[in-house]
Image (cartoon, rainbow, N blue to C red; front, side, top):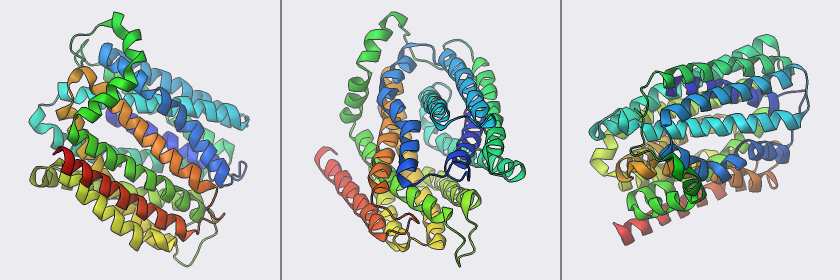
Length: 399
């Protein structure tokens, strides 16, 4: 189920990138790019913790079946808008709905994992899932890039690629339906308490995070990385939209595909290293090490705002960021009880999206049209330093 969803997500998001960011028929400036990301992610960031309450009160298996089917409908509708050359607004609204449901599906899968894997195996299993899942997501993105390359870079090529993303939703729904009723939790389902729980979802999820020092540290690390990742993503998109430079890196969607593949490769390495690092260093020290490594990479490579070093940074930041993320997943699955785990994972998604969007929104108003604004990259390094200090303060005060 997770692999099917990640393949479809990788395909859909890469195709959407081709439709919005690198489509000659829909040229966008930095502010418009930031607005597009906001339309895709911000509304779900607001409702995510509340929707996460459903994962803690309704049969997760049933929720995942219907969520996958609903996502498939949204993706197919977005494809139709592209194929008929429809306006930008309905396209972005449908993309918003599809990505929002995708985040909900992944939160549900993560919250369900302790019901199918023993606690002692959670860290290595998370790493294996991340390893294979990242590769499958990259494969989906590669299919989208190849499809657009064959059909064309306009609305038609993007529409065909988006339509292929429905396959992941269909396979995900079939896989979820294969589990027995209530097999994925939560324990003690109480459907009548849903409305009250939904209304208090944000407070409950945030309270659970603050009550567990290890989870608090992981969330700080995740949020810090996503802020810098937002800045670096905008830099990368704009640099690669320019003409080819002497680095030999292809421009446009193909170049961005290389950058995504580099990030995915770093995430694959992280999936191998995390099960080794976490038991030896402990979760708080692993987050600290990840932020230190990311800080060095940001100052050494991203501040050059050149395509070649940015590719190296994509790999290394993918490695550091995914190490922090896997540490956070383990902390939430081990330190948070099952009755609140779905809301905590939804809070994590909110941290992911708001940190990412806030960074892009601020950067869009100061970045150069070709992305070559080294001051922004330096600001990203400063954010890493501040996040590292926050982690150290929490460790000292609470652990």
